[in-house]
Image 1 (cartoon, rainbow, N blue to C red):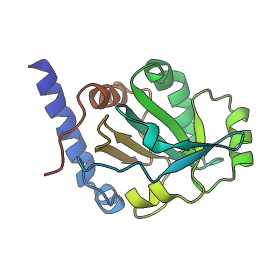
Image 2 (image 1 turned 135 degrees about the horizontal axis):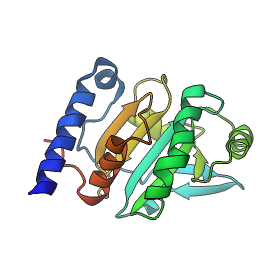
Image 3 (image 1 turned 90 degrees about the horizontal axis):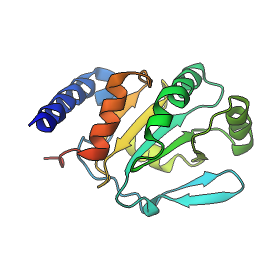
Length: 181
């Protein structure tokens, strides 16, 4: 019963986020719609690539950032300190993904800030552009459940140290979100 109530509260909160004008016009996808990750890949340091189709049965947290952007840096510092230690061993794939940055500058910025969570690059912005309509107010936070349904999209960040953020991630990992109607 408590889990159902928590899930309903989460969905009510997400409904409020989706009603905000910038949120509503920003996302091309509706809450609960499945995102086909098969055609996408990210590029990792060392010229390796990551096929997103390999993310089976795991929730997905993608944080699109711009290196050297203050709001991205502020979010990632809080994420590194509070959220990452709590979720790193859970059933979730998590990447901070550079948007518009070349890998060498992104990696330099990442190392200068001593981040430890995985980082990747999406130079063609294919996945991002399939989900979003514009490029403003970074970071863009995308949270998919283990069936890769779009559960949460946040533009401009959220406090990654907040209890709300951590509960949201746990709910998506443990319960997911209902399919779009």
